[in-house]
Amino acid sequence: MTRFATETDAVTYIFSSLARFDWQHRGFDEKTRNPAPTQRLLQMHNLLAQRREYAVVTGSKGKGSVTVFTSNLLKHLGHTVGTVTSPHLVSYRERIRVNGRAISPEDFLRLVETFAPSIDEIQSDLGEGQYLSPQGIFLAMALKYFDEQGVDAAVIEVGRGGRYDDNALVPNMLALFTPMILEHTRYLGPTLERIAWHKAGIIKPQSYAYSLPQAPEVMNVLLREAEMLGAEFAFIARNDMGLLLAETADGMQVDFGRYGVVNLPFLGRYEIDNASLAIIAAGNMHARLDGVPHASSAYIEGIRAGLESLRWPGRCQKLQDAPAVYLDGAINTMSVDILLRSLQSRLKSPVVVVTAVPRDRDIAAVYGRLAQVADAVVLTGTTRNVTIHFPDAATAVPAMRDALAAAGRADVPVQYVDSAPRAVDAAVALAGREGTVLVTVAQPVIGDIFEDRGLVYEQL
Image: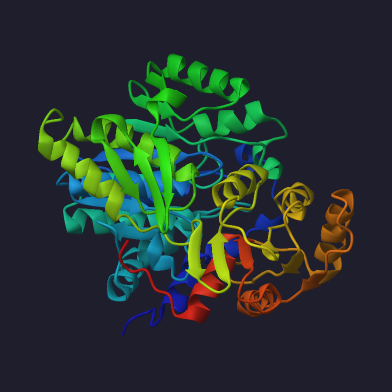
């Protein structure tokens, strides 16, 4: 008799240790997060013994994109590639993929069953205020699955930080950094330097680290960490990145130098930087693996194919025409600014904004950016992810009205709809056939919208 009949049963169990801990009121990660229980779980199952190339990715915006871009490039260079990403959109299974395909429901349940005795043993030994991280359990499941599938390279996205993140327990020879901003201050600290210190913790001794452009204070922290650990650090300069040539109906034409002009199937201009970092990352990992020579035409064609074939849903994604509906996980000021620049030429009046920003983000600042373009606003939220909470109507509506008034647009109508799919429906009605609906929401809300529309992405 199996212990877990459904994904819901399994996920409830995975989160059971955290549920007993007062996580909603915890403080800084260095005081409340401890990867030691996950380390024990990995050791019990000998999950770090397999020779495999690892990259670990962190940052404030784009780390998921860099993860899947790097993975897809490596796949097209002939490798079997595992990815761990979070959060998911519809199913927790999306967090674990091999060559872009999500782990099957059967394998997901089987692996939870496999680890349950060890999880129970570890949890029984935990003291007050301690917990076995759900992220750590997902990592253990992923590494076991990667062993079974013959994965020779894995790209792992961490959560909000890095230094105390369970996913950073893998022996990665490569650390990748996307741009950082002031975020998660409740858990990481009140300054950009402190946040960078947390994220710099993914660098390992005598390894490699690459970063997209950063604020000077962030760059100083990364450089100090790399120097202390004897790691080789490289800053990816602007002239080393792809160059936008033209927008297309479903993406962009981008000149990637040695790799030529590529039809990148994304609307968000930020994906050019992410793809540029991924090209360098894949090259670094490929150099330590068997495969086609870097100097060969086959290598160039593999990179081109990896860039042009990737799907990464919920990232500046066009859901429909008439009206055009664009969907993105833009919930901080950096991501909203880049999203608006990316879609500037595509926004047709009236622009109706649907937004859901979690409580732990700078809601006022994000609302202020969206207030500049909105002709109407529909606010929403979700309870899909128990660890991510959204302001209710009594909080969100006045905050958005304040932002609109500060932007000189106090007459713009605001409403709250407690179902994300219905919020999009309301926005579509307001936009008419000629307008634009701009959906900027956290990823669990994207999951609600995808589930309502029957959108499934088992294969990236």
